[in-house]
Image (cartoon, rainbow, N blue to C red; front, side, top):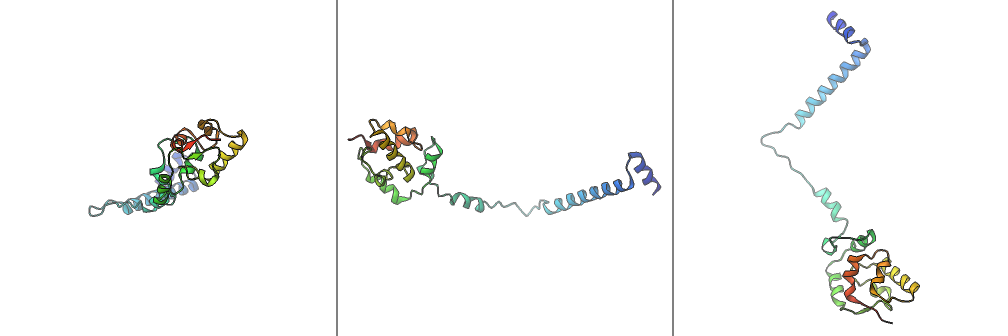
Length: 163
């Protein structure tokens, strides 16, 4: 016991500080030993990683990756593509013929049939059309928030300018 007191005195600790320091060391070592025993590798056991919980997070987003272009011009454009486009909506796009929608007379119902165009974007198209008094060029759709070059290229084949 005398040796311990000399050691405490040499390192400059009070007896209370030494007691606390000793407790922390013992607690740390005990935790390390328990952790080692808990996770010690067993030859007959292998780690099994279950990703089902995180996979469910992605499934719940309902994003159909086959309908998303590799490059997205705006956040709104990504949101328009995030609507679930199942097989019934694939036929919706097949029903549209090239140059079948007059951009100067189309209503919301007709505009939302375009791939990647939702209700909000259709409303913005009509709002811009009314503000301009009609479109004279299809590229004017780039002024609509939510329509970038990629989306315009996707929908351009269905549109034409009429009076």
